Amino acid sequence: MGDSARREISFQAGLIVESIRTQRPDVIAAYSDGSFAREDMVRGSDVDIAFVVAGLSDMSKVHRRVFDGMLFEWAFIAQDEYLDCAAILKQAGFAHDIGSAKIWFDRDGFFSELQQRVRALLRDPGMARIRALDQLAQVEAWYGQFRKSLGEGQFHLAMMALSPIIKHAFAIPTALLNRPVTHCRAVLYCRRDSQEIGFSEYPSKVLKILGADGITGEAARDLLLSAYRIFDSCGLSEQDRQSYKAHLEISDYLVEINEPQASVWPIFFWTIGAVKELRRDGKTEPSEAILDSLTPIQRELGILHPSELEARGQIIEGVLRMAGEILREKGEKACQ
Image 1 (cartoon, rainbow, N blue to C red):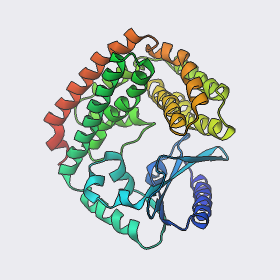
Image 2 (cartoon, rainbow, N blue to C red):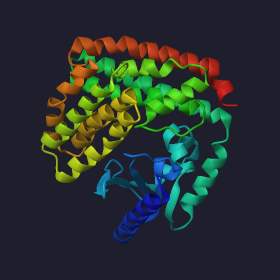
Image 3 (cartoon, rainbow, N blue to C red):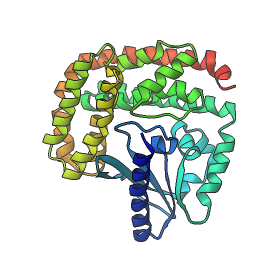
Image 4 (cartoon, helix red, strand yellow):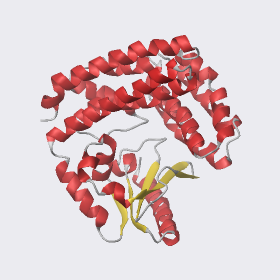
């Protein structure tokens, strides 16, 4: 992404920050994390802004706007979430997000001081292994939820549990190498980092959970078109429709650079993620409409029937075994 594009993005983000500061006197800091802060944005990347607020806040609500094709997301997070530095350092995403954050506003220097502490402590090689172990624990916990949902005949709940299982499984090698994790480009990051630690077959095993192993560019394009149609036809508000479709732009980018398997992950991540978010926000009708419209995606990924989903359990168990092996054999060495 060129300098002029970054300047325009920074300008728009600054306008959002100033507008929120005017509306919310309880905001004590604002920062951006993710690819914008790391300066490795690609087409389809979004701009995340976190507002740290004094007291309690609705941390679950994400606000979104699309400006000139660029998606901006922001949320309000209680200051209390930033007080336990040890807890922050155990979380692979949160720790690196704070360490690499671009600060827009910091009224009393609270966030700047925290960032300096986190940056210093991120150098501790032992904590990298703890963050990788935390990712493994997340996979194990969500796999338990997956099995429970299948046992109770809750097919859709089991299918949705695949999303966090895959997300955290992809993050294990990256966390082990003490690097920032990402969501939409997780396949690429996992492939790079798995090769570095000598487990190059690991990403393909995780892709088998998704059902994206061996998928062609043409099939990936069809999946992307299916996802666009889903968001166009499920009764979403115009703002939600534009926002979710903007998230899918990165899938188009990944197909364009000849990474069809990598492109499938954000398609699945954001269609399932939309269902979860809409349910959380009380938007029941569009969330159920999305679930009812997922058949083309489920068919292509081989998770249309309960028996197919049941078979994924064995694949997940194989991924768990390899992840455990990675941590046993490479944990201490990789973190040095």
